[in-house]
Amino acid sequence: MKFILGKKENMTEYFSPEGQVFPVTIISAGPITVTRVFEKSKDGYNSVQVGFGTQKESRISKGSRGAMKGAFYKELKEFRLKPIDATDVKEGDVIDVSVFSVGDKLQVSSISKGKGFQGVVKRHGFGGGPRSHGQKHSEREPGSIGGGLRTHVPKGMRMAGRMGGDRITQKNLKVIFIDTENNTMLVKGAIAGKRGTLVEIVSR
Image (cartoon, rainbow, N blue to C red; front, side, top):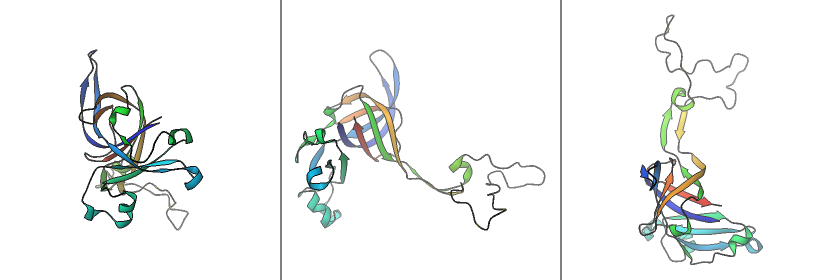
């Protein structure tokens, strides 16, 4: 299992040597440092904790400083591993983008863009109401919420509310190009989030 943390940069086009053009997302991936290895015999599960990026010591809580072993990482994340994979990693190991290869299939997780409080047309794709027969301002209204036989709104009713800011996991994304000198990789397609969003990348 290959894994790394990165930062989403922007989207662009990549022209392959064969002349094909691909929409790609640029990711600044790693390097990351293994800060702790969890073993099933001791901790109840197999996992690897890694640190990514740097920041000021004053911005890190006292509890996190102990987990960081004296370093000042911006992010601490865990990756669940199988028992076989856990034996290949030890504390202090540095993992960079070179562990991946062109053509690898990825599972990428990130936080999508927050869009604030939105209505049902944008949030759920409602069609709105007709502007006819005396209805002046019903183009983007939700319509009936089916409360005729009840004294409450049914649970799960699609209504206006906060949109975005969700954890999105995308599977079967493909590595198109890797630049080991600049620690960047090009991934085919779009990845959820704004520029600078933390990205968790796994290849099984």
